[in-house]
Length: 216
Picture 1 (tube, rainbow, N blue to C red):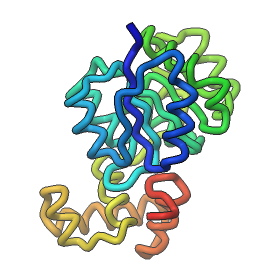
Picture 2 (picture 1 turned 180 degrees about the vertical axis):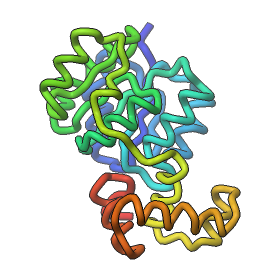
Picture 3 (picture 1 turned 60 degrees about the vertical axis):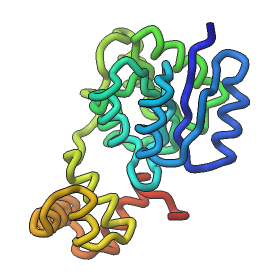
């Protein structure tokens, strides 16, 4: 029986390309365009593997992976993304990912990465760091998150994404079920940690790290 895969990516052409690439070895059970839909469909479909992009609207891939690891830990999370910043590899593996694949090398690496994840081992794209990938290969049962840098807290990333999407303090407060004062606290802490002074700078940071996409 073919292993079942759910794809989460907000670029239609990418979804179509991934579906064609994987169709001979896996069953594609669905495709969604944002993290919240991914959580809903994962709960409904119970796939063996979910492919996640980092930058998706409403909820990015890192937060999606973090929630999946708590609610549906049997599903193997494989990131397929253009984001190769070490902070995002750290965040992805800390959130429960089994594999991290660069879109640039998907045709060559993705099928192997998925099989590696299904065998409960880790895969790191060589494009991120050849040395780190080599080290991960020596002990593929060991989470490679520690090979990469630190990251913002989960709540900071949630607030950052919503701020960058243009949501008001009131809207963020309602979406995250926290007080407006708490929203402002997280926003101010983000600015201090990232060394920025304005919402526009926060938005540029989110764009540069793939937390939101250019077309949002």
